Image (cartoon, rainbow over all chains, first blue to last red; front, side, top):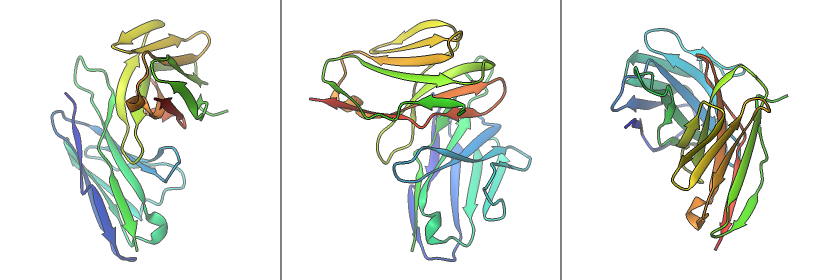
Length: 118
Length: 110
């Protein structure tokens, strides 16, 4: 299978604090992981592409200094929302690309992290 | 023109009927095509993928791809209330990321 986990599943924090979200591929190595954000009743929005051992590639309009991404190993990527504000409250979802030989190069999604900033 | 377009719906079908979900894409170089299902408040889960023209069946689901017309569809046979969700079409070009449609909301009426 191809299982992706995220932690925490939900978090509530005060405005101005930083929050770290972890994304792990449990049964495969993922050289590429993706971070998405989804506001209520809206579609997925790609925030950034995370490549193991290199800097993340951010989509237009996403502040790289606010959303820090680290992909230090083939099974772990982290997203840190720095100085979070209420407008950052959203559903953050990661996905990992299964690039194993003979695989489908499919993206599998984590269960998501619901962030609420008070 | 958007990369991937879907009718946002909602699409309502009675239980037991066939639900037909459609998706068009703009880039002829697109290589592979995916259907994800997303329940409210949950993350997307992969239903199936298709690479070649024609039909691909998996249980009650059939994906259909027509590269000449640049559309991909998903048929759900014997629809169940548990199939009620938003269905996301995603398209991938060679070595690139997935481009998602905005999703079609399906409601299966008991």
